[in-house]
Image 1 (cartoon, rainbow, N blue to C red):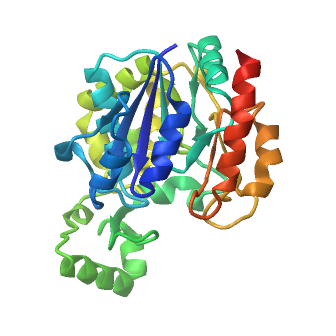
Image 2: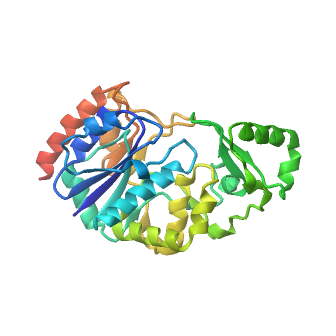
Image 3: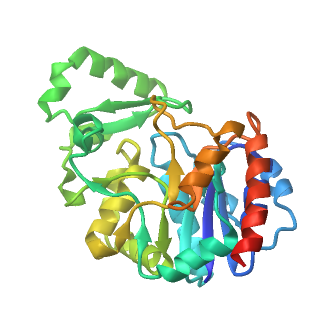
Length: 318
């Protein structure tokens, strides 16, 4: 089984190296995209001499801001590199704050036993715990005022009564965008999400067949307006791939993500795992292959404990 990991990062070069070293084995390749906003040199140095790593070139790097299309474009760049290199097997999307919770042997065995399945959380709209069932993300134009998280602001089309319902707020936002050199000309067109046909959304981290990756790229090449629409969708990485799969993949072959995230603490961000969470991660390892989030800066001990646990698992699994 060949596995191709797409890893997107904007910080933590040494945690990235640790993740890759943990996952590295035969027939495994890594396609790494580093946010264009940051200096790539610490990442290049951290990953030096790891032959299975393929860095996205400077010309193809994207600026990635939370809630924007940058992470989609970065992921697509990695997909195209993978196709260029004629890879096959499985493609797994990870961030630098992900980590495996089962052995490499078990990861390969799982994908070998589920060759025809794609693993991605995907729910049709309306989604109960999303604002307006998720349609808010599609029905307005979303723009980013800066690089910080939650800097995204929305504008309805001038043809939408919602534009005039909060006219002063929208005029102030227009002035802020213009002051930043951004001309939101899109608002003079009607916002019509019918191009999405059957919108779906869910967890942004997935494990897809390379054949599915090729079908996604082919779909976008044949439907350039589809990607253009998503350039002003809020958090598009949680919608675009799910919505494409709805059109190109048999529904019975789409299954839940294999990446575990704990949202039970509430708030807008998932739990960052710490030393005391090892038992929780061991428990869910029967259902998931990876987990997120981890921070080596805040608690490296949990990663040390996982490494020890995975070494034992590797011996048992083989």
